Length: 228
Ligand code: MN
Image (cartoon, rainbow, N blue to C red):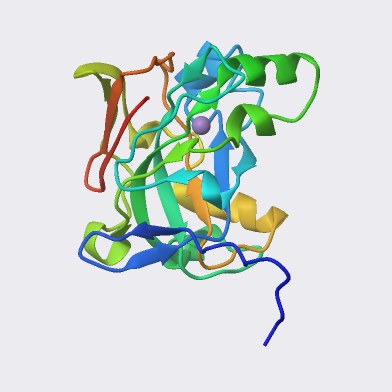
């Protein structure tokens, strides 16, 4: 037995619809995976392909919990996304095999300190403090692919205080789920417990304290949080 000199960190686990919990290892995120969102961020989706960044696993916000407005920002943005959960690891996974590595799916929010991200972009600095801060990754219940299949089309939508803010279709993703798994596993070896936030459609915008965010991914589930 290892004699830990401080208490080891707890395992972050996302509750599964129907029981149990999915233990999380790493959280990868795809940037600019919907053309209209790439355009609203000032990029040309035909010339700049999607890419990856990360959040720490303990940035996940579970069970519809409130999200504290983060420090050092005056521009907290919502990004509604489908989350892919890896159940079987691997390196250089072929597109044709990719879906067999997926355990399930969830609805999630990639909350962003847009002001810090924009400042980092301008200076060519990393995005981490704009993206990977505490409570920055609300996530709904995990649904096994055995139940929901592998959604490649269907509504992805976010309401703020009951009004639709973002609405699109999963079929508009530039990298499909098999493609993002193939790309990512060519960069790093994927492991069971890894999550991939698959990118947001257009109409990202700011939220304020008191706002209620309710997102849905058709055929998968919902995600909910209130900014406090
Ligand atoms: Mn995002």
